[in-house]
Structure formats: C-alpha cells, structure tokens
Amino acid sequence: MTGFLTLLKRDLALAAREGAALGTALGFYLVVVAMLPLGLGPDLKLLSRIAPGVLWIALLLAALLSLPRMLEADHEDGSLEVMVTAPLPLELAIAAKALAHWISTGIPLTLMAPVLGLMLNLDIALTPMLVATMLVGTPAISFLGSIGAALTLKSRRGGLLLALLVLPLYIPTLIFGISAIGFASLGQDGASASLLILTAISLASIAAGPFAAAAAVRLQMS
Image (cartoon, rainbow, N blue to C red; front, side, top):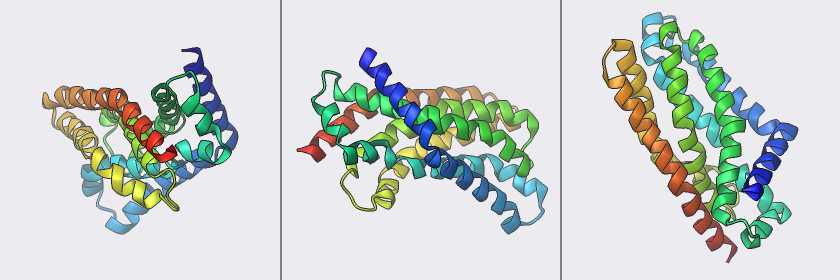
C-alpha cells in the first residue's frame, strides 16, 4: 500500500507541476459548451433541455484529451519498465495512475460543469444531481481509459485510436448519467435507480480496468 500511495502522490505532483493536460481539458470543455449556444441560437428552452447531454458528452471528450499521457510519459522515460518488474503489482500501479487521472482531471471537470450549465440555461435545482452523476460516473472514464491508454501505448498518434477503443465503453456511463438528470428534472423516481446503476458501472470499472490494462501493458512490453 505504501508503494501505491507513493505512486499516486508522484502522479498528482507531476499533474500539478505540468498543468498542461488539465488546462487543455478545461479549455476544451469551456470552448465546446460556449460555442453550442452560438450554433443553436437563443432558444433557452432547447438549451435547457439538451444541457445535461451536452455537458456529459463534452466532459467525456475533454477527459479523452489527457488519457494518452497516463502511461505514455512513463513509457518514454523508462519508468514503466521499472513498474512492470517492481514489487508493487502492476495492477495496483495502473490503479494508482488511473486514480490520479480521476483526481487531477475528472474532479476539476466535474466542478466546472455547474458553471457551464448556467451558459446552457440548466435549471439550478438540477445542479446537485448533475454533480452527483459526474462524481460517480467519472471514475469509469479514468479506469476504462487506462485500458485504451495501455492498448495504444506504442502507437504513433494513438489519440484517435484510443478514442475509437474507449468511447463505446463509455456509452453506458453516458446513458445512465444523462437519464438520472432527466428523471430528476421530471420529478420521477428513476433518478436514484440510474445513479445506483452508474455507481455499479464505476465500481466494475475500478475492479476490472487495472487488470485489463496491466495485461495490455505486459503484452506491449513483451
């Protein structure tokens, strides 16, 4: 566990020191949401209706921008080879890196979503549900994304390939994240059920993602 925490602190410190990946993700998130009202026009009812879907889709795409660097930097400087042969199981090392990605990227994007929701005329009363779904659902983005990052480790310009690999895996998270907010807006009981399913998806991703990613890394390094 000490090695896990050490690796987690290292990745968080690197993310804070560089800042470029987070800045790019937040900037992309802002630009996508800000440009949408310009394309759709000043129909506030339409913007309010599609706001949850837009915020979720933009968050997924923004998070994708930083996924390639999850393992790429360690592969370039040789740290990944050390992790493969280190006493700390590679699965735990991958889990630490995915957790660091969620803390340094998923949480900031989630906290930015309510502010961007105001630009889309999102009902203020839906903000708690929006934040709850994103906090619960974004771990799946990081842990499933670690699989794509591992599979495209040695691919040149693997960002597009990574997106093609992991976007289908994000569809259940997207569906239940948006449906929970939709049920909440209608005052129906399905919101809690959708939130529980979203939690189950994230827990399953946390449990299975590091094992699949570690197997992919070993395959890439062999």
